[in-house]
Each structure stands twice: as C-alpha cells, then as structure tokens.
Image (cartoon, helix red, strand yellow):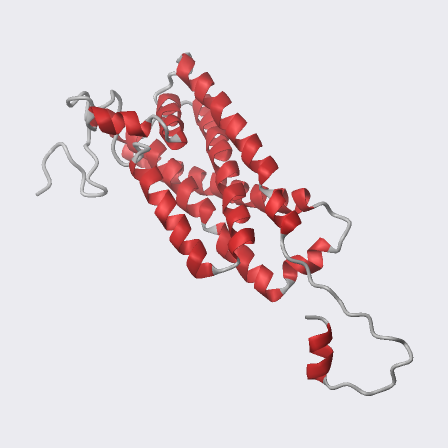
Length: 247
C-alpha cells in the first residue's frame, strides 16, 4: 500500500527529510544520481556484445590493417558510448524536473562529467573482456556476475548509510560507492564538500588506468595468417579450397 511518504513509481519517498540515516534533501535529488550511476554501469558494460559480433563478422580485423592505432580504435568506440550515456542522463534529468528535481546548472554539468568518468573505465573493461573471451555466453556470465554486486554495494538503489556496519566496510572497496556519493553531493549542491574533489581524482586515475590497459588484449589477440601460394600454380581452386587458404 502506498502511504503519503511514498510515490507509486520506484517506491521512492516523496519528502524523506531525515529518516534514520537517510540523506537530507529531496527524494529525487537522492534517487536520480543513483539512477544515473546505474545507467552507466549496465548501459556501458553491454557494449561488449556488439564488439563480439563485429569480431565474428571480421569487421575489427579489417579495421586493424589500417594505419589507425589500436588505442584510437578502442577509445573511439568508448567515447561514442560516453556521449550516448550523457545524452540519456540529460533525458532522465529533464524527465525528473516536473517531479520537483532541483539542481543548479553548474552542479548538473559537473555531475555529467562525473558520469563520463564512470563510463570510461566501464567501457574500457567491457571491451577488453570481450576481446579476450570472444564468446557472448561467457561474456554475459562474467559481466552480470560482476555488475550486480557492484550495483548493490554502491548505494545507488538505497544509501549505504542505511546498511549494516559490516556491509558499509565492504562497500568501501567499491569504486562506484564513491561515485554515487559524489553524484548525490553534486545534486544537493554541495560543491564545497572536499570529498567530491577526492572522488573525482580517484575516478580520473581509474579511468586513465583502465583506458591505458584496455588495448593490450587487442594487441595480443589472434590474427589470421595467410599461406603464400606460388605464382606458378595454375591449378583452378574451388571456393572452399580458397577459403581454407586464408584460415
């Protein structure tokens, strides 16, 4: 049953104020930042499926013979996903404004930059895992086994201040927990909070490290070897024999 303190959608409280250890601020100022982090987690990590499909179709092999570096190929795909994520986040924020979401423009832009910093390492790791596995079933098992605990321990659905003390200690090792806390602080216009700058720096270092390490599986992935056929060969070959020469 829906009480006066809850909304029919998502079960979010209308005006939580301070219930137990619930953060101060409007309900959507607490809920929407967690939703944006959740979107960056699941929306970006699913990009590995498209990369596996392109690997199977031979598209990536054709791109690798071009002079473009492997790092540029991977970062290009990653930046495309980041731009799409920021656009989706803007739509979610715009849809929440009629429900009394109030956030200053400066804090909102910084929040979008934080979402991009979250998406960059997620996309890099997703593509790196896809390049190593090259199988949709194995990729799905690993991705969902990793993302679900990260989501539950990030405080995106409910603030970790409501959890038990031992669970908060475990969540302290989750990078997304710091991202959610910083995003909520920005939506509550706490720009002077020193923890925001610290979490920004930590996410930036994580993004640079993941982006630098991600192209390595591409460099060490399998390449096709071609068999040289002497020019004097005049025996006609069927399509199947020609296919066997390039495998």
